[in-house]
Length: 109
Image (cartoon, rainbow, N blue to C red):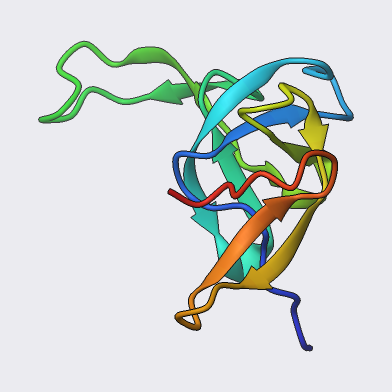
C-alpha cells in the first residue's frame, strides 16, 4: 500500500479539526509515518493502568497522549494565525519548503 508523505513535521503547531479535542491547538511531539499518525501535546489524553516498575515506583493510573490520524489536524500558519493547507515550492538553491496557501509565507525555518 502506497502512503502519501505527511505535510506535518515534529515541533509544528497544529489545530485539531475533528473529535473530542476539536478546536484545540498543540505542538506535534512525534510523527508516526507507518501508521499515518501524529502525537500532539496535551491532545487525545488517555488513562493507562501501570504496574510499579523501575521508572514508575508507585504504579497506578497514568495519563498520556494517544496518537491521532494526521488527516484530523491542520497546520497553523505563524503569519496569518489560521489553520491552512500547504503547498510545496522549490527555492532557487533547489531546497524544498512548505508555503502557506493563504499568505504565501514560508513555513520551514
